[in-house]
Image (cartoon, rainbow, N blue to C red; front, side, top):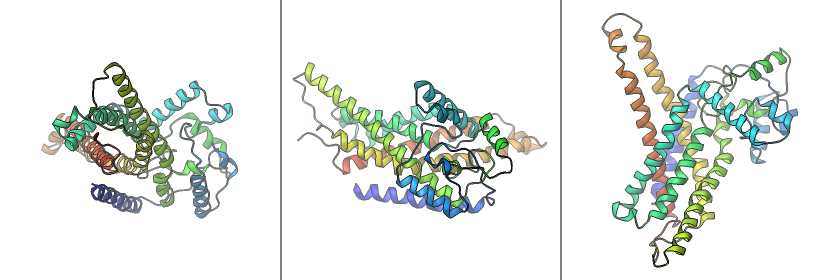
Length: 352
C-alpha cells in the first residue's frame, strides 16, 4: 500500500511539473506587473527585478506569512486593523465574486463538489473495505466522509481561478497612473498555477509566480486539513464516547484513531495531493472542456449542417455530464489515495 501511495503521488507530481512548464510555454510573454497597495508586512517592498520578487516571496513563504482570510485588494480590511464576523463575511463575499468572475459556473460546481465529496468518499470506503466491513468500521467511514467534505471543498476554493472586477481594483489602477507603486508580492501570484491572468484580469503570470501558486496555498491547505481531520475524527471520537456511555454492552471492532496523527496526515495530504489535483482540474482540465464547447457554440453561428448540429441543445447536457464525470473521478482518486495512506500508516486499524 505504501508503494501504491508513493507511486500515485509521484505520478501526480510529474504531471503537474510537465503541465506547468507546457502551460507557460504556450502563453504569450508577461506584461508589466500591476502595482497595487499591499495587505501584508511587505507593504514597503519594491521589486526592481524578477530575482528580487522571487527572493522576497521565498522569504515570506518560509517565514509562514499567509493572509488567506483577507481578499486581495481588500484595503478596507487593512484600514479596520481587525478581523470581525462582518469582515469575514465580506471577505467570503468578495472571494465568491472573484471566483465567479473567473468561472461563471463556480457556484454550481461548489454544490456539485460537496455532493461528490461525500459520495466518492463513501464509494472509496466501499472499495477499500468491502461491503461486509462498512458497518463494523463505520467509525472510520463516518470520520472519513466528514473530513473529505470539508477538506475537498476548501481545496477547491483555495486554488480556484480568480479575477478581480471590483471598483477597488479599477481605483487602484487610476491612482497609480504611470508612476511606480509599491507592491505586495502576493499580487503577482495567481490563485491557480495555470490560469491565464493575474487577479487584475490582464497581466500574464511569470514562470516564477506560477511556481509560487503551487507553494503559496500549502500552509493554508495544511491548516485546513488539520482542522478538517480534527473535526471529523474528533466528532467521531465524541460519538463513540456517547455510544459507550449509553450502550456499554456494545463492543467496537475498531481501535481508537489518534486524532493528532490523523490531523497531521490529512494536513500533509491536502497540502500536496489535493493541491496538485485541484490545480490541474480547475486550471487545465475544466478550461480545456470549456474551450472545446465554446468553439462548438461559435460553430452554431454559421449556416449549414455543421452549424445545425452545433446548435443542438443536448451539447449543454453533454458538457455538464463531462464536468460531473471529471470531478467524480477526481474526488474518487483523492479518497482512494487518502484511505490507502491511512491504512498503510496504521492510522486506521481494527481492534485486536
